[in-house]
Image (tube, rainbow, N blue to C red; front, side, top):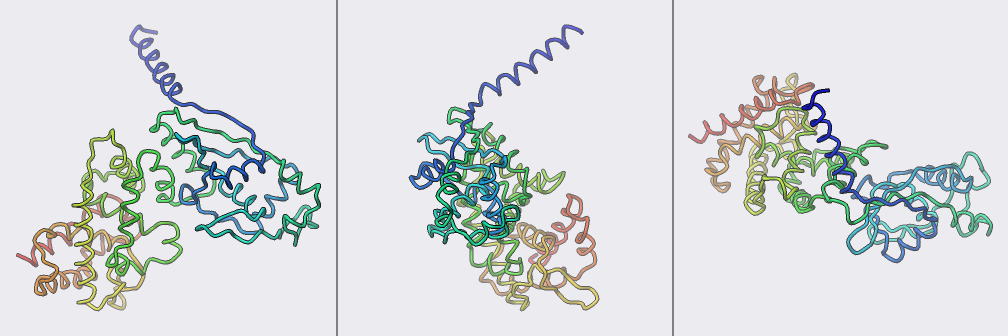
Amino acid sequence: MTGKEASSQGEMIEAVDEKISAIRTQSLDFSFNELADMYADGELIIRPDFQRMFRWSEGAQARFIESLLLELPIPPIFLIERDDRIYELIDGLQRLSSYLHFRGQLKIDDEVLPPLVLTDCDIVKELNGHTYRDLPRALEIKLKRSYVRAEILRKESDPRLRYYMFKRLNTGGERLTEQEVRNATIRLLSNDFNHFIVELTGDQNFKETTTSVNDNAILRKFDQELVLRFFALKNWGDEYKHEVAEFLTEYMEAVSDDKDPTRFDYEREREVFKKTFLMIKKIADILDYGPKIFGSYDPRKSQVRGQFSVFHFEGIAIGLQEVIDSVDPENAEQMRALAEVVRVGKGDNEFLRATGGGKNDRIPYRARVRYFATRFAGALS
């Protein structure tokens, strides 16, 4: 081994050791009764939007309770310690929420859920139909004393390393949407941009022009991803060179990390967003498209479908940035000219060739935006 190679390896070992020293962890065993008391006293915070939503069926919840009673092994939960010593749950929502639901303590939107009635227990079927309160005393005590290992990331840990640790943690297990993972982990850097995105999903014009997005997609935060996509492509479009999900995550990280040079003017960006979707709403009204403004196009019937298309969203919303500063949304002549571009463009083969399966990468993306950007500019010249 040469001296240079030995030096390089030494630097690599030092870099790993340095990161290890920046993480402070602790492993503790908690009884579920202790965790329930901490939850009731506000010493343990559960935020469903911090990771995956509480999605287990009542049967799955009941089988978890059955597993505790049978002393079957369960995976650890992960907690983060805040500066005020309060714990926040990062991983283990399904398990802990199931226990709290059975105990009649689980709150959703400040409402306590009715206690869980056991169903679908398939090992001890005699448990089915019972609640916590009518368990035999011995089983009630057994359940309270059931314990789980908790891996705790201490408050002394480097916040950026906490972020990357939990980002990786939350990409395992039950599959989340990319936006759910971003929402779950980005607050460990900063939550300002995330709050901003959520705020803008409530913009009335945005909501009315994206109502064709189905309810299940909204539940899984697709509306928030569309707002993120708008800003990432508008501001960082030239950096889009690989898989779109990674690109969106990288942009959100850059904006949220105060150590990153990327800056975000919240007031200016809010104005641009609102103006963009006001214009799109007016275009939809002129064309009588309603929520179909971002609908895909059926060439056989020569009509716009009701199905939402992210390709049409990108082409129109990002393409409008070419003329955003020169348009007055109250100028009827300008809006009619832009509407005509949209009417023609949605059925134009030149645009449609950049949409559809396999077109979610940088080359067709640029073609989609370029199509509308050049024609919007031409319509107003």
